[in-house]
Length: 248
Image (cartoon, rainbow, N blue to C red):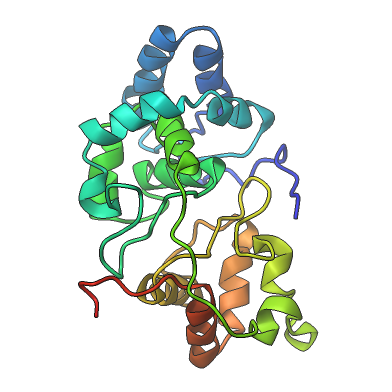
């Protein structure tokens, strides 16, 4: 499903929005300049406004993401030891950590920005992204997108929610947005196939309770609020990769 990305979300009620258009200007006109500009915008300037710069979809944002260099991203991943949590090949070695191999670059990039600006909460990811420039994030996103994801272990027919949805609850089929194989579509819809059951359930419950709120237009918060716990577990089992050896 394609979504309009040139319409920016609501601005925060306090502080100033530092648009990624300015960041992309630095990226387009030179990597060295971008590093300095990004550092100013996402640290000093944002802190001076007492409000971190939020993420916003735009054509300029897509230009930043497209500037990602997978080979440099590999070097950044090694230097920042991303494998400590996400595995050597982007496949998590425990059942509560997301695998990011094969994940769409635009989605991973947005999540890193959201962690950096504390729109999405995680002490570990806040610490990790604090040490990254926006160019680093674009490079990392490009690199992990090139890695093969862990295949799902499904053999049975998919749940009806995947292929038919439930119009009585205004639920479109999962595969309309996330693809027939859960591979993700468009710019902001992530691949969900190959995630561990525990992580999948935890993520959906976070949307359901409102603990996680960085989904555009609250789409996943609405969808998950309509699902029972058993339905969430059923979907997790369908899309899930095999449990890790540590989790068995």
